[in-house]
Image (cartoon, rainbow, N blue to C red; front, side):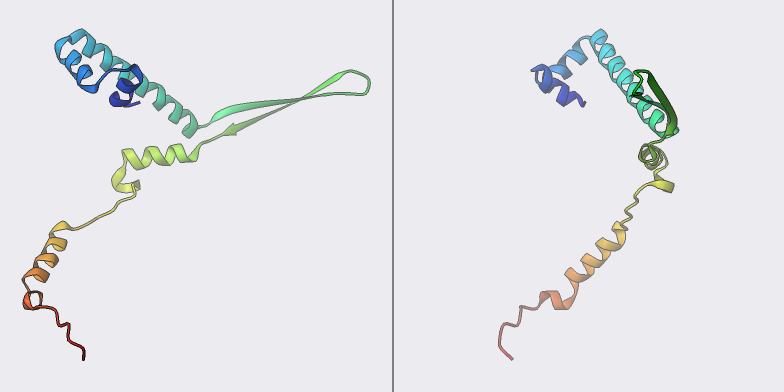
Length: 128
């Protein structure tokens, strides 16, 4: 949750939070520690999904004689999306959804269009 969202949930303004953080160093440290703890928790969840975890499923059935038969199945589950998202964010150059726009080239094209003689002529609205 962002600080703004946390403020809304707590019923205080974001400006109040900023004031308290600047005014009270111990409060600012507590907020920072809480953010670090949350990041560590969520990083752990992502790592568990990415590296895989053991899932144990047990199916119990009652036989006609009243006895119970248990069948246990163990599997390893992975969250490949978690691994990919980590790679995209941590190794953006190699794995990210890179959108490359050469601004110099785009600006040069626009300037050329604006300064070309054709851009200074009034539109020809007469029918041919």
